[in-house]
Each structure stands twice: as structure tokens, then as C-alpha cells.
Image (cartoon, rainbow, N blue to C red; front, side):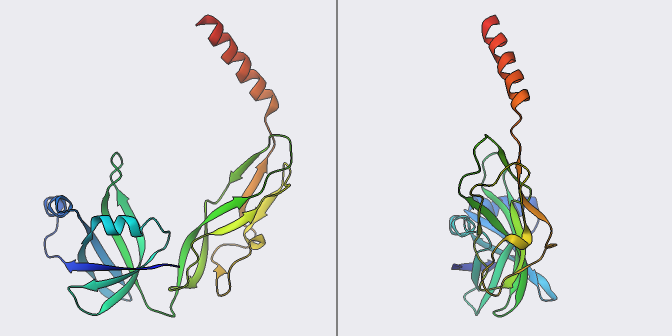
Length: 198
């Protein structure tokens, strides 16, 4: 997993007006909390933070006001719904060797059995417990040859060493749905009628 160093500044101004001023300076208001300490209000450079957050569960090394660094992982990210820029980020304080519960993305590889069946991601991300500095970026599951009705449970997914499930073993992560042939035929007929009317 990657570790990203970011320079952070403590902030004493709060509220929407202060947050807008921070964002105008291409920075992001951040709250750092955890380990029973009081929340620390910070600002981080917007572009660098945006790049760091492209990696799920990225480990961020914060140099706060040029002092000793603290390790943190993203806990909650608020983005502008239209423009996508970062509005606010909550970071969770972690220590090396500490176990944390996070969600890691589930990727698939391989082809389903022929027949036009659909693969449904019941869980897009898998809850796991891992050492804070060794959180896997994702897990990959083979769906090669799976037929309609097949499902992949949490216990079926091979996890890296030191990583354990933080969800029921029997939780369904992926399932294969039978192709809806009749519905598809009906939809195509309706589309044909619409095209004819046009």
C-alpha cells in the first residue's frame, strides 16, 4: 500500500465562510480524530490530497505545522456533487502495528459461462481488518465459468496475509443472475415500435 506525505496546517477558523475561503486557496478543510484525542482541525493542499485519495485507504503521513508526522487514513470524503472537487475530509489517526477496519474494493476477472447472464456486485467493497500500514488496495475474484445462480461468499475470497474478514463469512459478495430473455425480447419489441412511430 502506498504512503503519501502531505504538509498540513492547523486552522482556527470554522464555518461555511471559512471553508469557502480555504477552498479558494486551493486547500481542503480536514478534521483529524481518533485514539480518544480531541479532533484537530487542519487544512491540506487540495490537488495533492485529491491525487492521494485516488488510492483507496491510502496511508497519509501528515506533517502538521512542520512538526512530527502523524499517520492517518481517510474515513469520510465529501465532494461537490456537480464539480467533484473536495469539500471536506475526515481522517482517522492510526499507529504502525495497529489494526483498523476498512472496506477494500472488489475487482473481478474472467468470463461468466456463456448465456448472457449478469454479474451482480452485492458488495462493491469488502469490509476487512488489517494492519494500518498494510491495507490491501483491493481484492480480485475470478468469476471464470460461473453459471446462473452461482454466488461468491466472503469466505471464498483469498485475502493477503494478516488481513481478516470484518463481515460474516457467509455474506454474499457476488452473484450471477440468469439472463432475462423474455423481458429483453419485450423491450426490443417496444423499442422497434417506438422507432417505427418516429
